[in-house]
Amino acid sequence: MLADELRARIVEVVSLNGGHLASSLGAVELIIALHYCLDTPRDKIVFDVGHQSYAHKILTERNKDFSRLRQYQGLSGFPSREESDYDIFTTGHSSNAISLALGLACARDMLPESERFKIVAVIGDGSLSGGLCFEGLNNAGHLKKDIMVVLNTNELSISPNVGAISTYLNKIISLPIYNRFKDSLETFLKSRMPKGGRLLRLANKFEEGLKGLFIPGMLFEELGFRYFGPFDGHSLQQLISAMKNIGNIRGPRIIHIVTRKGKGYPPAENDPVRFHGTGPFDIKTGESLSKNCPAGEKTYTMAFSDKLLSLAAADAKIVAITAAMPEGTGLDRFRDTYPQRFFDVGIAEAHAASFSAGLARIGLKPVVAVYSTFLQRAYDQLIEDIALQNLGVVFAIDRAGIVGEDGATHQGLFDICYLRSIPNLVVMSPKDTRELEEMLEFAVNSALPVAIRYPKDKSQSQATTSTQAYKIEMGKAEVLSKGKDFALIALGSMVGPAEVAMRMLEEERLSGTLVNARFAKPLDEALFKDLSLRTKAIFTLEEGIVKGGFGSAVSEFIDKPVERIGLPCEFIPQGKREVLLEKYGLTAEAIASKIRQKLNT
Ligand SMILES: Cc1ncc(C[n+]2csc(CCOP(=O)(O)OP(=O)(O)O)c2C)c(N)n1
Image 1 (tube, protein in one colour):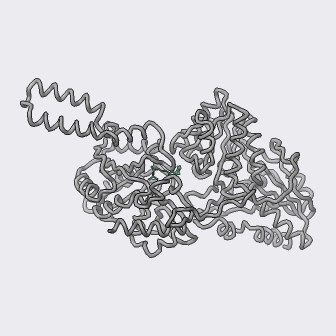
Image 2: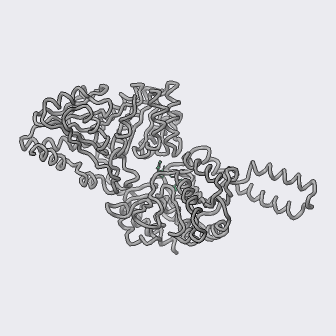
Image 3: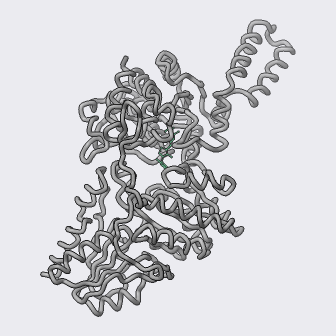
């Protein structure tokens, strides 16, 4: 009954607010069993990613607020320390739960016996494709600390899980015959064989041989974990008895459970990929209620997806790489059209970068499509394996800027700062979808490491740039209008609001030059220097953290003070993109008002 109630509540709220439905429905019994067997918040549950934790939220004093899930100032869609003592960490990026849990365990074991607690890490089979998991497993198996890892397998990451580990887990699940065979062999050996006999020794050897081949979880056993499972993750009885029994054993343990994504809500069971992360939908039919792009308009993701396909049709060297996000990045169509030239590497951004370096080194043109927030995982590989070797890998950085309801863990606000200091790397940002297409073409043909950042949005710019003017030249900005009082240099997504702000100011007889920067690196230094000599004030505008960002780059070579407009160096909370842009002063009105104020002082 409780599971049914939880599911109904989750479906009701997610149908209105959107959210991670399929994963959360799949984890309902698991979460009930965990709370039944543990004494939280004294005992700790570390959810990997945390997108599956809705039932945990409802059961831990947050049912009342659950209707404000993912809304501005409402409950987070992920575990959040600010929100509750039951959430030991704020999470959102995958594959770190075992490391976090092991750190907790080492610290706990330094406490007096009476203060010690249990620690459970909950991780999905998708997240297990991330290398960080194996760093955690490696260290945990060595330290032999008391932690329990619940491995929740459902054969899906966001889309079908890929990779050798995934195949291995599927093999475990699909081997009931071998499991039964092994069990009967054991019973037979124990009951029938005379103790100490030659035959028994032989039979034991035979079983050892069998183990290497068939015993489920051998990989984990060899890494120093005790492995238990697979269990039916929707049977409370199985889960509770397993957790109780295994909970009393010491050392690192893995409980392997099998669940169904979307369990209990047929539309999500039937289409778990769409319901992994969904917008609002009609509960009865499951049909999406999100407004699609108006006819004739495209999101940046759609424009990227289309253009890459057309470039790939003409150039067989173009290959595409995703770290488990084919749908989100728009690479799903490339996957379906060119399966041999498409690589889903699992939730493994660091590997995706190094892997692409290998592809580029032998002359291919890899395009890595990745969300800004997840590219953070690949920073070292981007520097060492790509930029240092000056290899032609293109990073199509989607969700750059404010992403909205996923909140602080997912905002794409740091990429300008962390990319602009990397030698050899070119960093661009288009003012509209057409410009994204031009930039992508420029990038794949440049043989240089290039990053192109674009937002979760459709084009806002209305500038009527001629076909000729769309032509991208290395390090060259585009002047959109000319005036004498001030210059506003806007990057990418901010060109649209900048245009509107300029029109407002023009009506007040403040005339300025508007520049579409196009490049955050290299900058159009000659143009910007000239503007600084010819105008009274220079403003920069970017959808990113202003400290160390695009405006900072401009200010580094201009003698005048540069008024930098962008986001403060804070973790930006969840909320609709429009709401947050307004809150942080990145609307046309707010931009105009900042410029007006400055010019009037
Ligand atoms: C570093 C990182 N890359 C990508 C993502 C996006 N992401 C969120 S959940 C998810 C799939 C997780 O699959 P799994 O762990 O199997 O959980 P399930 O949803 O299947 O229960 C992905 C790729 C992320 N959260 N973190």
